Image 1: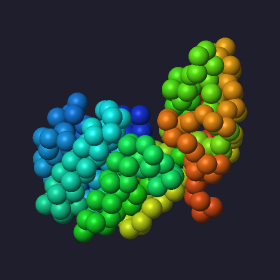
Image 2 (image 1 turned 120 degrees about the vertical axis):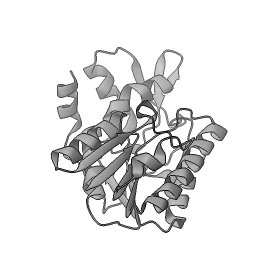
Image 3 (image 1 turned 60 degrees about the vertical axis):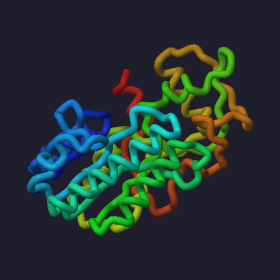
Image 4 (image 1 turned 45 degrees about the vertical axis):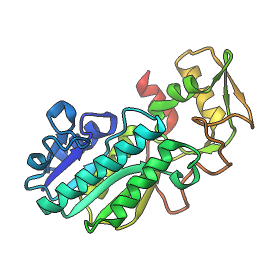
Length: 248
């Protein structure tokens, strides 16, 4: 089966391609670096010829409100139109757990817009909503600096390894369309400040992490459970300490 992975050269995309190839599928990595640009439409028709499934794990290059909305709306419209022309039978998109609870952010408003375009299309689909990745622990800390300290809300978070995210996306891609949302998360829940504190300590980063109820997550005021999946989510198997040990 030919499966085209949009964003196939990125953190998740490369892993998805490899997992599909290991299963014997014809997995094609499509990204601007390979001449496929969903924003302009360049190379898209050629890439989708003969494809049964398209997996979209691409991400916006900018989080500025107007730019991120333009990226997800334009690229998704272009992609769905070309999929319809090519006879694609299953559209799989990677999204984020809690998106509808994070609409204070322009990024998540854009992700909801993307999801709505997919739902309105006639192409059978699956939307895979994943929790935050272990790989972004340092990035969260960097974004959350207040003076020389890291300030984070003590909300719950259930992060997962990029390898587990890719496994979930690949599994959905080769299965029947859900025509709905599939939630995936990590095997453990943490308080956000605890997660980041442990991650920084493992990399010998001396920054102090403060649990601050007034702090925001990427500029968003989050509730206790805004970032964790519902009870029927499929969970990854790689625990945080295991991932830290391998990363070291």
